[in-house]
Image (cartoon, rainbow, N blue to C red; front, top):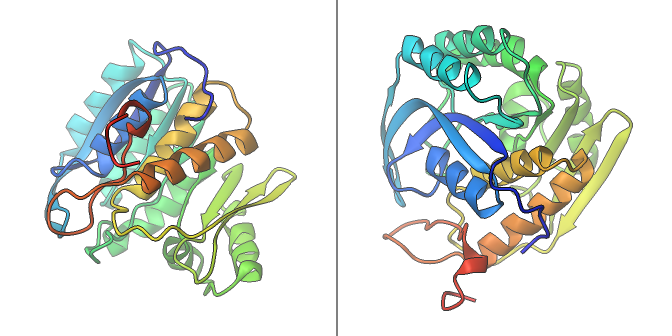
Length: 273
């Protein structure tokens, strides 16, 4: 496992949707927070009915209770870092942005979840404008995959130069850093980190594993923990890439579809190695 600092009392927060099958969303975030030695907290934005075969229904939580969850956290425990994942409606996005603006926000990671692996739309089309106008400008780093980058910027991504062009357009929206995840492209997996004088590639062999449910949620949550532990953004991404790679390598079969990554692979000595 990556060499993280041992302090389970560091508070970190996820604002995201719930995955009833436990592989992605809030559940993946909290598993990652625990595996990487932080104290996880959550604000639930939506309930999904899903399993390894797909997402079948989504019901949003009211914006009022989302606001109350955020206020309850920040008025008692100030997170060292936090992430925002699935936020599907323009009203919820605006409420989250307005509520967070009242507090000191440290190390905000935004994973702009738009479409599930099974093709279910998790972001209403009319919500994209609010995501761009209100949440992305607040981010320390955003972590979109190539499909999400194309949706936000309109840049069609086929190669590294396209990724750089799109990353620059994303930076113009206000975040300090952008991590464009290239896992959906052909060839080796290449992610691009850009922003504030940084332009760095993270390359790795493409893993031949079918069980990749929750990879995006897990990677962004790992970055949250690393920033909370005090690593700079490059080391935070490097550590998180190492963690998600091992979690995918040790993924396992549960259900009849795309199974989850193994968040606790380091502790499962008798598991799938």
